[in-house]
Image (cartoon, rainbow, N blue to C red; front, side):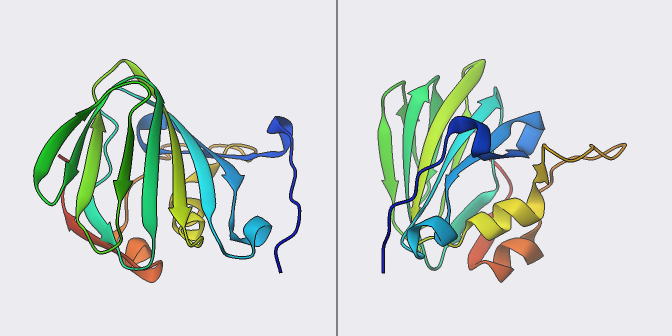
Length: 153
């Protein structure tokens, strides 16, 4: 049964992400009874996950600031500030940030993909190990129903 969930900015988990960016976990499966996950990426130019697909989730990206290229089924699109893209489950996709910085709101439904982000990223509230770098791991992705189809674009 769904219930109210409220948290303030200081309570949101922050994960180090690709290229030293940050993924702020706004809502996760535990907060939404599995219905969705919502996160906010603050990333720099060139940030790009591998070309991949999700077996279980649909994704929505809202580009709050910056610009990016988005690939969906090998078609390339430009996404500008305020642009939104819906990426259905089972369809290969990727993006690459083309601006100096980008602020991306991501919603994934149903929830669950946050497990992959937590397994791959680093909680910024913990000490950073020497030489630590966030690297996509196809085995971790597969555990959470994601399939890496190729390198970043």
